[in-house]
Image 1: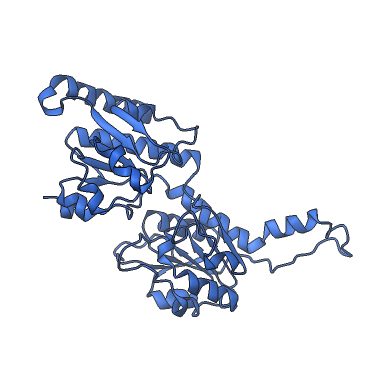
Image 2: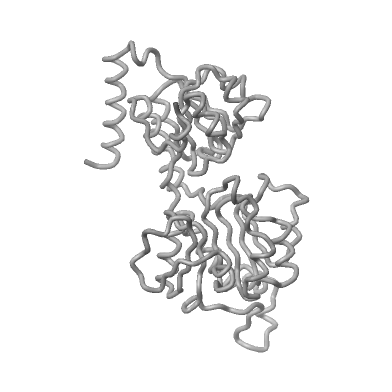
Length: 351
């Protein structure tokens, strides 16, 4: 059976449930997407989700609009819209929240659980896409293609006395070391790609019971990872315990030739400290796809730091990944309606 056939069959099962057991399921669920534009800016239709209930989609929702828009919702689809415990308590019909993402730090999952509302995420949609972004960042820093292409456009090559030139050091990855913080699905995929480039891989994670099959791998403590790595890449979820853990103390331990990559959550990094480390030459460069407050504020210190490339939280956003997200949302809602919720991240708080 093909993947599409499998999804279609799930829709048919849910339809049968509504028809055969109306006392349990009653009318169709009211489904509200609070910030749907980034998932579907026009190329990723909501049709499959819409078949599961009465769907209302908002491109984006301001905090003072939340309760009014969501007060009749049975199911919420949320990407980055913040939901505090206070807001959730004002939604009397709410039965289920599915993230349109892997991360769920914008939801007070404890309060949701105490209200009997399971929260599900989509854990696997972006593994290859985000890992691809990380390595495109590393390769960009290694070759500085944009800088050299712009130099050619400005006429530097035409004026050159030699047939070639480079404005920044050109770096071969083979034999270098990458340190990966958070060795889950994405971190492991980054490690696999690094291995194919001939890099040594260091990893730091709270779970160290399953090592990858390639030989040039080692678990290590956080400080050693920063000291030994030529590239540090973060892939940890944001929690109360690790907010701002990447600070000047860790960054100052890095090699002055090393690079720092963050395609996880901006809140993991003390941005003042990262800007200082770049300004003082503690590290050679950085790429960050996320910042502490998004969209980025004009007073963010990273905007004036040298040798940093900031992208607008786009690592996840390929059409392929967004299509997988849409399927994941459909599967999460389908499973919940059938009484077998999947990917629930707040089980410990549910009564």
